[in-house]
Length: 456
Ligand SMILES: Cc1ncc(COP(=O)(O)O)c(C=O)c1O
Image (cartoon, rainbow, N blue to C red; front, side):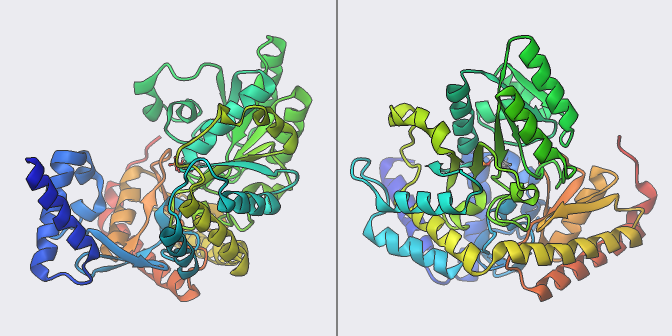
């Protein structure tokens, strides 16, 4: 394309963005162009993976609008959102109070001058400090979960003067180089080795193993800067640790002078039935990472938060860790509104009540379809269903998709399908999802039971 053509092409898309209705013909053109654009300018690999393409070959589903627990494709086909954008839509899609805060801020000042003090950054920091457990008080804002983890790693290193970390097998903390070093699944790591040195892995939930690694590092003079864990493993398939795990790792971290980092990127903001996952065990970490739902499902926003004592190290030179877009006014407006809505609607309480109901029903399905379902588990509305093999898992996901319910697998355990609806999901919609799930399971049981094969 020459410059003039690029100008026309961009204007065409601006017109599409601002249009309130599209003709059937326009819809078809946009679908065709999107497939072409992904093929030739983005990454054609996505077209082989997205259910919205492979399960709907003739009419691929293009995401167009959404509200609450529903979204629609460009042709107006409606889907129940039981995935919550991998945990970002705790307040639902386009929550009116969060959208209004962002829209109001948008017309005043969208991004930061980088020089004047921005009040919303301070206001959100205060709110977060006030809702966070124990003496967690000072925070830094960025845009993705992985950025929060990178910041936490740097903070732990600068405070302790140590470089080793303990992470968990199948744990997920992001995919930039530092957070990827903590990743407990080889497929994502191998092409990028060597990653950060000095990362030791233990089974999630095994406090003895954490203590053992701390002991060994101590004895060999290496010292561990921090132990990093998700309160409940999300991408590994909604794994809840034994009740003594978090209290015990808190204790051994203190004994060995290591910091304890809670990666609450997915569990935070009410998802598991408490405001933060560590609150299930009354543990206060030294650093907590937040992301996903923190931006209210409207803006990208993440943070890491720590204690006044630890934060001192960043005060003499605040520019030692910076981000151009981190803590921008739009994201902070979304974060302030997200905290407001989380408390006003008691989203943690809703997650607790609805999660208990949904998990109970999933367990009942497990009993009825024990040939197909190995386990239903999780806490709050971070739930997973494990199947004997990935083939059955995929059939469940695609069967639900055909029935207009969107769920997905988890990233480091492909046999587990996640159920992460908005925390304010209406009760009746949960029943609708369960009905469609049972319908799907019935069909799979009937048609594919004989070809099941156990994977290890
Ligand atoms: C626990 C946890 N930490 C970090 C991340 C990375 O977040 P992001 O994809 O926003 O970088 C995720 C993403 O799923 C996560 O679940």
